[in-house]
Length: 123
Image 1 (tube, one colour):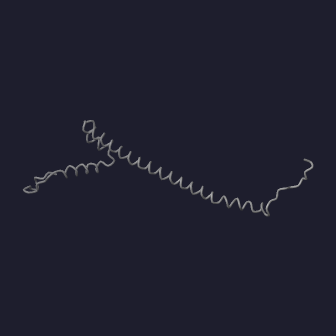
Image 2 (spheres, helix red, strand yellow; image 1 turned 60 degrees about the horizontal axis):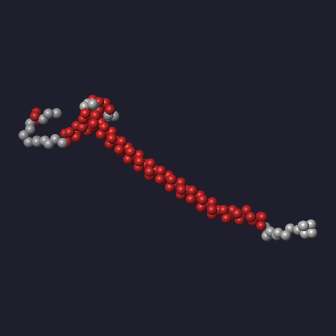
Image 3 (cartoon, helix red, strand yellow; image 1 turned 180 degrees about the horizontal axis):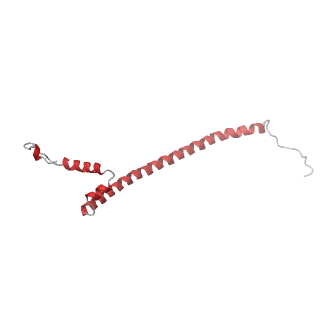
């Protein structure tokens, strides 16, 4: 081994090390953009999926909860556990509830207006 000359047998192209960082950055730019765009697309899919699945469950569950609650209230009223005062105490706006009930009851009545005197109509 001592007989071999100690000479550098490898040769680098001119300005290789000066141009190397620019070459590396040029190759990296398309990949970085591709990773960025794929990350944004994945995030958008996750967000849209979250709102689609979570939003529809919330609406469905609130509707089914309201139906179950209405059925339970009707059961308590029909079985005699609750009376009119109890239902009105549970209402947020009892006057509006009474107006709705009255309107529903009176809208189902058929009226014969012929031959009725004003003092025969009861208020």
